[in-house]
Image 1 (cartoon, rainbow, N blue to C red):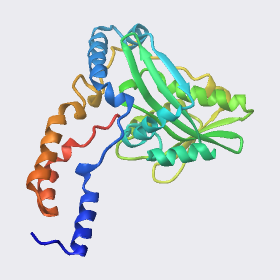
Image 2 (image 1 turned 45 degrees about the vertical axis):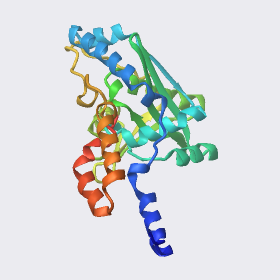
Image 3 (image 1 turned 90 degrees about the horizontal axis):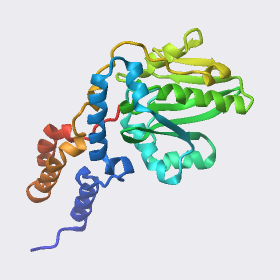
Length: 282
């Protein structure tokens, strides 16, 4: 066998470096316990179906909501949520782990991460608020929450905590900007509901809720007496895409390694398999 010219070897190396099949994503604590989260959701959904009303369902859960500054070990999960969360995400700003850590270390933004437990178990780290101070207000640069805990009052508690921080610092307002996307209608509905009478309209569907700090701090969730709603479609009682398709992924990667030798061949196989991408969390 001859030795390939240096230019050809460099070109092949660049192709290999760019192949997504060899990417290694950091595995978070939530990723490791997806099987347990799936089992817990089965129990929650059974209770949801049997509950006479949403109020009684929520009371039966005995939710515990914690908001705190992230530890270094929680930064990867917080960054992951900025990419995976689409529905209740007010600005949909995506940030890598390195970028987020740099912003927090520099003091450009402050952060709260949200963890939730109930009588069935631990939901894990499910929400992120990134905020700064602008004039006399605390401003939410990023406000997001995983679908798995929507309609449980967690999002209201997140707003209330921003109000408490504003009051602790002698600030008058909480600003909640909204930037529309094709998927974040739940975020819009939340802000419109809690911000009625305090909304500054912007361009192209964007707006900002300006809540008095005291009003934000006093915000609570009052579930209706209506029957408990069905689980969100992407949090239904089925394994995550990562759980369900792990075997398919391995088979696909093995085929790429053994059989496919050009970019065109790989594209032809990968194109129909795009459904194997990680499932969004909301």
